[in-house]
Image (cartoon, rainbow, N blue to C red; front, side, top):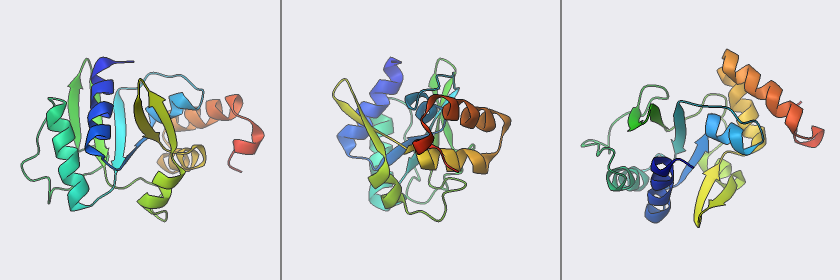
Length: 157
């Protein structure tokens, strides 16, 4: 585990941030190991949660957004360099999952405990939906590889 990433997760957990890890990090927990240059974090868009996010990022020695209460978090554009060539991409919406509430996604999340820290990852079915919606070459490859390593009962038809 990359120490800087673990530190972020630890601070998310400490602040009780409502978030879900999506993208490449989530792909890895479902059995297809691939490198990724960012960690995609989908978080519940409430004032309280935005303030928790800011505290967690500050505690991780990354950044403190002066206008976190009103700023727009746009996938692919609101990111923070966390060092060693990795970015933290922060978002309040996910393409392909607009019709599902954050609370439902969080309720269905796969929770993985890493060194005593609980980390929320998007559930398999919704990961696949978001990958289909993104429809980039790497997303299609992720879907193909995930389908190879996971049982038919977990596949999205």
